[in-house]
Amino acid sequence: MSTKTREDQWAFGLDQAVHIAVLVGLAVAWPAMASQSLWGLQPSPVQVQIYAALAVLCGGVVAVWVGGVVIKKLVEPLSPAGRAANTLLTTGVASGPIVGMPNAGKYIGWLERGLTLTFILIGHPEGVGFLLAAKSILRFRDVQDQNDRHQAEYIIIGTFLSSGWALAVALATQAAVLHWLPKG
Image 1 (cartoon, rainbow, N blue to C red):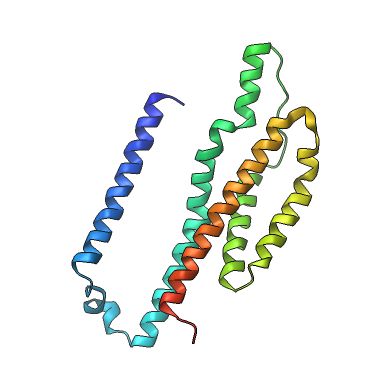
Image 2 (image 1 turned 30 degrees about the vertical axis):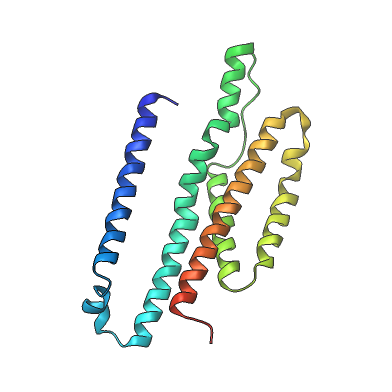
């Protein structure tokens, strides 16, 4: 990764952190702002349902799409494609292209994180275990070949990061929904 790319990532991360800090600061400085806005004109039961729905919507965006970006950035240095290029440079022999459907990994990750969020929010966390077991069975053939251990490790690391991200976001989303719509 080039120095310029790292600087761009740090600048982007700092920019986003400042945005979040400003929003948190506004919420702390004026806690009654929501009740004085158009949201405050809605009847109370409708208002909390809207807040709960917005929490679910935000949780979905953060789990699925933001999670995809974060996981991609985390596993990018471990990419087998980058390893194949390095193998070609150092040994003069390419380890072969990775063949598969275009963008399939992205869509699989979206489905995995979306289903994890859904299972947690509908109160069936055992579904997450079923999802991981099903994915493990389907990926077994990919990781069975010990000739390319790097590919197997890459898949396992990506799966754990994606599942962990989805589970953390799902639990935070569940806590937000329960804040607005407590069980009772």
